[in-house]
Structures are given as structure tokens and as C-alpha cells.
Length: 255
Ligand SMILES: Nc1ncnc2c1ncn2[C@@H]1O[C@H](COP(=O)(O)OP(=O)(O)OP(=O)(O)O)[C@@H](O)[C@H]1O
Image (spheres, rainbow, N blue to C red):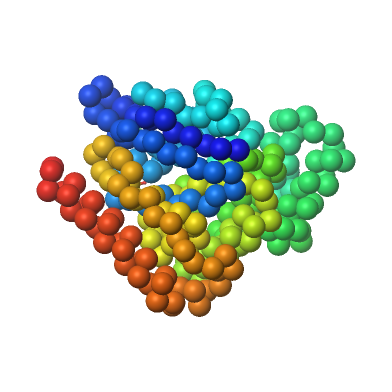
């Protein structure tokens, strides 16, 4: 599914654009990370793609069809897992499939496969309160994947996790992306994470948010942790960090 933003701008208050002039095409199955200073409009961009808010100008298009609201072909995961505390892990993952009216047997089969994929089959009957933060995010990702979204948006999904769990989750999300036929668009503050995960990194400028740079990540498809120490990785990471810093300073100078 091709995602296209065509001259997209967003204002929450008249005359105060948060995002402006976004022209962007994301091909089916791409993994794109979005970085930028706080307040540059990264979460707003994901809300527009998810159809939770409408652009003030321009259009968001999926395979040429205008996005006018949320849809099962677009999954969204936030920084905190927001699981239903009274539903078991399996029933959290099943939520969207129940809403779609999928027959019980097919639902159970899909939920079982996803729980295997995220390594949580042994906790299928547990309530979310018993799970660690990383496990809860795995459930949230499995829940978002349940309806086979063609676009999966992740908003700082590992921002609240400790460093070790975060690295495990980075490897996990790359693996999920390689196994599931979905485009991934992920917002993160962590430039190292963005360069490690993505095929393409978008750097947003501030006030209003525009695409300041669109960088291809030319690293091996198999991203193991030692990649983070390779010269190519370190050079790209430094380049993106410099861009984010420059955009932040330019913004500070204007206010
Ligand atoms: N629903 C809303 N109503 C009014 N203003 C909003 C709304 N959502 C976001 N904004 C404003 O839009 C701007 C961009 O917010 P957004 O959360 O998209 O930025 P961000 O880059 O994701 O920030 P952060 O990195 O701090 O999470 C901010 O000034 C914010 O206050």
C-alpha cells in the first residue's frame, strides 16, 4: 500500500501551522523513522496518517484513496501500551479481530500465531498488569498487527523502556517487519534507534514542521547490534544528530 502526503499542512489554531508543505511518498513495506526536536509535529504526522485528525491543507492518500478516518489497514502503537487491563493478553490481541467479526476459530488461530511471533504464548491467559513494560509493548504491537495492517505507525514505542529492553525490542521490531508484509513508520527521539531500524530517516524542522531531510540508510538488511559500531552507522548517526541539533538551534533562535 503506497502512502502519499500531498501538500499536507496542519493547524490546530488558525494561523499557527504545526506542519506545512509535507510532500512524501512511502512505498509498500518501507521502514521509515521520523526524528526531530520536541514539538516539531512528529506525533501529529502519525495522527494524520492514522486518520485520527484531518489535515488543514492537502491530502493523505493510501493507494490513491484519501484517508478520512481510522481504518483496520492502519495500526497505531503509542509509548505506553494502553492495554485493556481487564482483558487477558490473548483477548487484548483479539480485540480488533472481534470488532471485525472474525469467526472464533480464525481469530484464535491468528492470535496464537501472533503470540508465538512476539514470544508471549506462555502468557496468553495472563492479565496485562502481570507483564513487564517490554512485554506489554509486545502485546500492543501484536494487537496492532492482528488485523494485518498495511501501515503500522509506532509513536515512541520504546521511549519508556530501559536500555537493555529497548535493544531487545529494536531487534524484535525489525524481525516483525521482516516477517509481516507491512510498512512501518516510527517516531523516535533516539537518533541511534532511528538509524539502526530504518531504511529511511526523515528529519523534521520546527515551527512549522517540514521535512528538512530525507536520508537513505545504506546499511545491511540484517541489523545485528554490532552494526551500531560500524563506521558507516556512526557517520550516519552523527549526520542525523547534527541535523536535528541544527533544526533545534534554528528554532530556538527564532523564538
Ligand atoms: N490536539 C492538539 N490541539 C492543539 N495543539 C496540538 C494538538 N496536538 C498537538 N498540538 C501542538 O502541535 C505541536 C506539535 O506537537 P506534536 O506532539 O505533534 O510534536 P512532537 O514532535 O511529537 O513532540 P514530542 O517530541 O515532544 O512528542 C505542539 O506545539 C503541540 O502543542
